[in-house]
Length: 313
Image 1 (cartoon, rainbow, N blue to C red):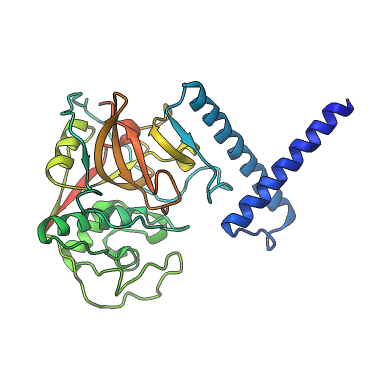
Image 2 (image 1 turned 30 degrees about the vertical axis):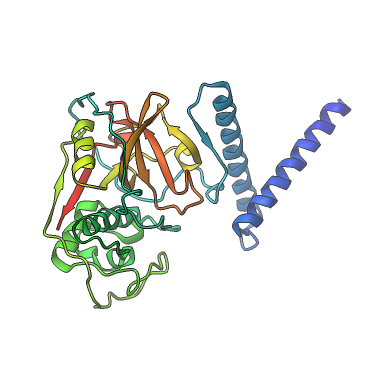
């Protein structure tokens, strides 16, 4: 019994040490929280840590195709970064792919990875990213556009700031008002401006178009011929929150449970497995430098083709 107790004490000490290192690395403190809430938060963190370790053991054994890693969201049960929930009936996807490799990062269409912070503004980043790509395609200039402009000013168009929105509503705002750059209107959420100052719009669009729902082939065609595409996905799983590398696949993904907006910037194949290349808005420390490779199998994984659209300049 002494041996078992000693082993448990050593394990508990190791977890406490990892917990302290994680808090220090991410600048997180619970000093202002009541004791029982801080304790509950640590339990959540330990559960996430165990899930990450289990997944990575599966990766080493060949049963998983992606790795997970602890990050600044370690004390969250699951991601609640954006709100784009919908219920849609999907038609069957075509399973024909052309074997091409598209990566708009290499072509200059994509700005640096941004970080939405603790604000459900993913919809704004997905919107600006597609417009940035189209402006580059037309002018050769890569301009970082203002997500804060959308968060602050588009509420009359049916958006909800840090509480989420559908990207079509954001596009409606840009059609009628244009969009500023991050130079004149930098990102500050969730510390929102109290008003919407009128400044200089540097981006304008005429309209936007939806891609047929659930059709991965149509989505691949759009990526290849148009550029980066605004998409919504089911990101409500811890495996997504702590994704680190590899080709992501989540059997529990629901193509009708769209909870997060990202930017689709290409597709490719590795080891015979096709994938979609998506840009997230959780900073460069998440995933593969802020990006994820999501399995591309013609079955609309995580709803990648359930709600996809692009701007028309």
